[in-house]
Every structure is written in C-alpha cells, then in structure tokens.
Image (cartoon, rainbow, N blue to C red; front, side, top):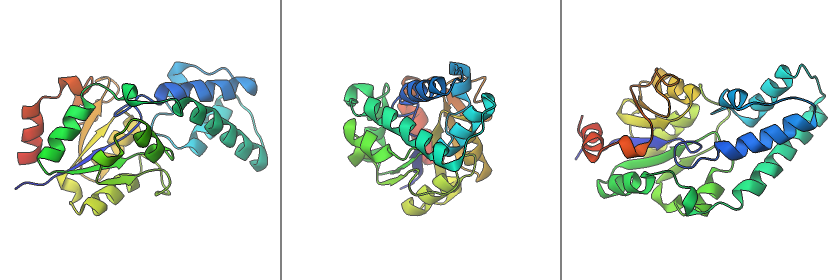
Length: 218
C-alpha cells in the first residue's frame, strides 16, 4: 500500500479564519491611526503574529517600544479569540470533511501544518480535531513560513519523507515553504496569486476523488 503524507494549512484551507484575522488586525491598526485594507491583509496570510504586526507598523510608519508591541499583540489575539470562540462546524470549508474521510479510509497520513497558535482550539470548535494524526502549529515551531520548519516537523511525525508529502496551502509563503523541501504543493485559492504551486484549485469542490487517488499512487 502506498502511504503518503497529506499536510493541511488551517486558515483559508480548512476554515476561513482569515476574515477574523482581518477584523482583529483592522481594529488594532485603526486604534493606532493606521488604515488597513483587505489587500494589505493578503500580505499577512501565513505570516506569524509578530511579523504581521511589524508589517502593519511599517505601513503606518510607526515605531513603538517592546512593551507596547507585546500589548498590541495580546490585544489583537484577544479580539481574534473572541471571534473564533463562536465558531462551529458551519465554518468548515466546502468538501473538507469528504476529503479527510477519504484519506482516513485510504489509511493515509494526515497532519496539520499551521502558523496559528490557536489551531487545536479551532479544530476542536469545528469538530475536526480527531481527523488529524498530528498537529504542528505556531506553538511547535520557531521559524514561520516560507521557512519549511512546520511542514518538515509534520513529515517527521508522520514518518513519511518530504518528497512523499502533499501540502494544501492558500498562501504564497506556504507554497514556497513546501516547494523548498520538494513536497508537492497544492494551492487553494487564486491561480494568479498561487502560480508557484504544482496545482491550484479554487477550493476542495474542484478536487476529485480520482485526483486524490492519483496523488496516493504516484
């Protein structure tokens, strides 16, 4: 039997928490006098909380001390947690349960590889926690994407070589991380943005069972 490792990003792939990140960052940026657009929010996808705040401060040309920086990060997280606290299985993106069920049935390795420090809590809220063999999130890694650390840790836990791992990602940084260690990269989202991926689909409704079977067998 062919066993591959299927590694999923969380935000924008399994659930759309990007909208909650956007609302929380926008609220924060506005409180310190910075305008914040959805285009800018795109640039924060797959990026750690520290790096995201650094970018926002840069855009607003604002300098603050470490103490203030920590306070702002905590404030953003508090607002974000307020939004995700109300999540339930209705937030799962189309066809994700079907794909996870298929991979379980085929006895494939399933892991999460996410920058989110709240990944376990979110998966619990949407009742998908038990679908994953392993979870590697922002609490387990030092380097954020495009560094491949999160995917390499997942591959190691699954005991499957990187070249036999398939990564589902919605961010450019995530696709670059997967590509850098010869994992197959599948972009979920916009073809123009994710052109570096091996394959790009709008969402999981475009991914057929036959395509998944090919991934396992090739």
